[in-house]
Image (cartoon, rainbow, N blue to C red; front, side, top):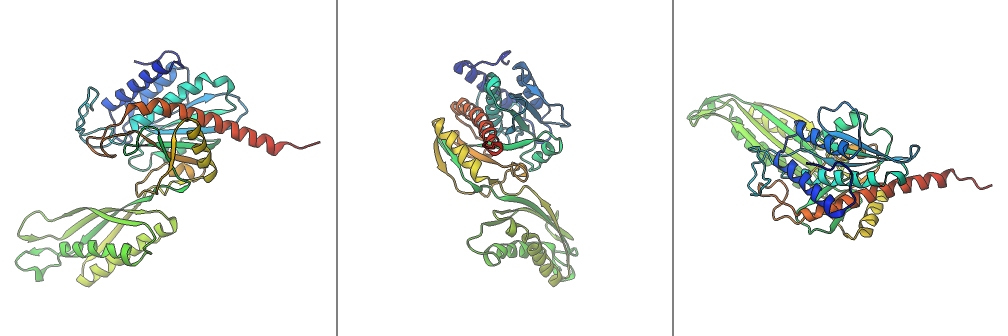
Length: 397
């Protein structure tokens, strides 16, 4: 499977990119385990004469299309990992790995950026700079972007663009927003140590289950009573573990959950507030509580200039551009934006089910237009940066 040469024949290119997406869909791999996926991407790029950078990555690939050697560098990014979900959507290319599927459409993202790479390769002689092609591992765990940054593969990049598919929007719809687009995503664990006893004599013990229940209830007061109603804060306890039989009060309990915030200044206050809840309740009962905080990616924060530019390119490519609301979902594209200006956009794929659903599907008619869009976006972003630098350096005589 694969093109030995880059083609600008739309039917041939679309057929190939659909094959790419289906091939990846049938053999999904979890975060940081994308070994086969990475090998496939390298093969598809190299078969098209596209350079692959030699960078220290266990999984993930960074390719490059070089035009004018002294021009600027921009990057376009796709994520490549799958989810631990058993696929229920029946198709000829259904996942053949039990318990793992591309339920978030990262196979679509990868096919789109591969298509953009092919198109850019065809335009190589006219490109005013270099396009870095980032195929990132481990987006679902929230830290794959850090491995790309640590590899040095983004050195010199002046603008970066990424995408996510939206199964709830029709093909041809382009969703965008400048400023904060996604939530900061953090994970927490709470360990409670009480004192075990017979269930018939609870007064002889310190019941960690009762304590856990009070903590869960009180955590919601952080949202309802300690932050402004206008601030978006979500605290969800998603796992409880305690005890192993019906007539024994256990010694310990364990809680796990997530916090989602849209403002960084609010995000920084949450761990201390959770600590205060835990301490107050556990000390009341004579127990011991511990908070373990796992900081995840911050909010995606789209640069207004590049967001407006990306929207303009979308309109010129025939998309219906709509402004979207911030989401409490997370996206580690935000790590790139801490040092590189750029924009993250949504592209409609008209699926029947939402993201992370075992019956998630998408309309493959969205692949080719998205590939053309990202090729145009990268090329014209280089043109903009190049022209802006010329204008800045121009000194009238």
